[in-house]
Length: 194
Image (cartoon, rainbow, N blue to C red; front, side):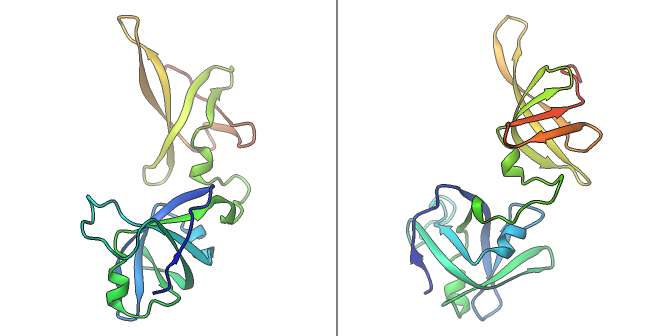
């Protein structure tokens, strides 16, 4: 098999999972974690980690982290399919089912102006035009035509204690004034009571 024992890069980001074999010549079908799998399509090597044993008992294709060289990768229907160097039959490809795919963040293609990788937005502080801190981006979600920032903040309860709460802010230009990745801040046209 074309698996090479490897260490996960320090800036590794999970970008997808291998769902199953695809065809009979060693291809695999991948479920990308992004609606735009550009990083998966551009990479020459993928780093794989074995699936959690509770999800795939008896997995024995490899342990730890492995690296595989990509021969070909393409979008097919609603998923991504890939062919690895040294994996030429369906049985071997099936053995990779459930493995997690990682890429170093440094290998991602540069984003266009006013485009951002979700992973770069996670952890940024969100403030409004008046300088009021609204919280920290903990996640993003897609709601069809747009993405939404899931912003976590501390809310004061009726008894005076604090609890973690979440507010949703559409990630569209009408509400997003500025994204400063280096400064770790997103400025928005949004109020705390929305």
